Length: 147
Image 1 (cartoon, rainbow, N blue to C red):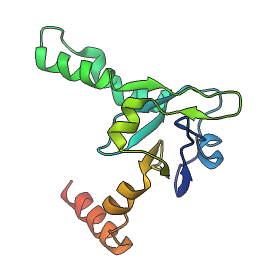
Image 2 (cartoon, rainbow, N blue to C red; image 1 turned 90 degrees about the horizontal axis):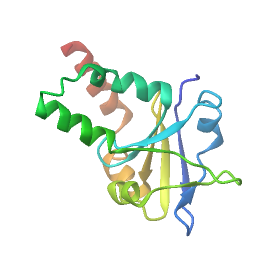
Image 3 (cartoon, rainbow, N blue to C red; image 1 turned 135 degrees about the vertical axis):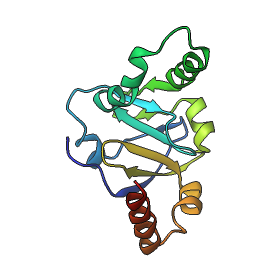
Image 4 (cartoon, rainbow, N blue to C red; image 1 turned 180 degrees about the vertical axis):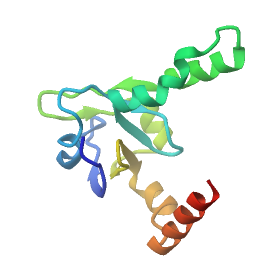
């Protein structure tokens, strides 16, 4: 799988569908199932099954006698939906995910390495757009140094 990066501004249609931009769709592993995931705050994440499996591997050994971990697993698993596509390549965004991300029409899809995020354009601009590249690098290098 190629690294997913960059951003594409586009729109959701009147039937709550988008087209996953070709630059991302073509970079995902061929024939691999994609999933909508409530992963990061304020946006919809789309992950291929192999990446989602990596993220969920820690739940393989959850002790059913641990109610807190079982509830965490339930909460995470119920926030995952398979991405479907119609014959014209349009992907309906389920209502739950549209509401979670605040998406009404204008969206921006952002490459995040192994997955993509779909943001309401306004939310993306207010959360991410106000950060300069210098600020982003300073935060990233500071976090790496702390590890």
